[in-house]
Image (cartoon, one colour):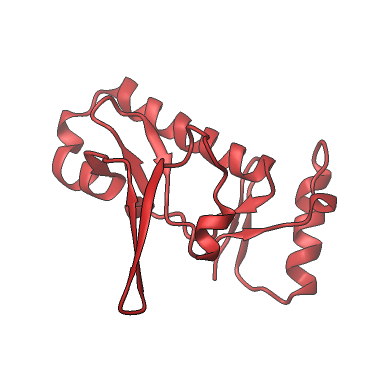
Length: 140
C-alpha cells in the first residue's frame, strides 16, 4: 500500500494505475499494459533492435530516473524486470515496493547532491554504494 502512495500521480515516467484489489492478504495492482519488460526485450528481441531504439530506451530510462530523483524518490530496485516498454519503445519504471522518499533538504543544485546523499548513506551505515559522475547507484 505504501508503494501506491509513493508513486507520482499522472506522470508519463511511471505506469498508469487503474485499480488495486485486496484478496486474502494479497494486493493485486491493475496497471496499463506493456508489451515487454527490459528483460524479455533483451532475451527475446535484442537482435531486432536498431541502434536508435537501444539509445531511445537508455535515454528514456535515464529520464525516468532523473524525474524520480527530482521529486525525491530513490527507486532502489532498478532491474530489467522493472523497466516496462511499449511496442513503440516508450519506457516507464515500475515496482516501487523498495522505493524510498528522501527529504527535500538532501537535494539541491550541482555536485553537492552526491555529497548530501553519500552523507545520508554513511549516517545510516548502508553499504555497497557505487558512485559515478552522473548517477549514484545504491546496492542493498
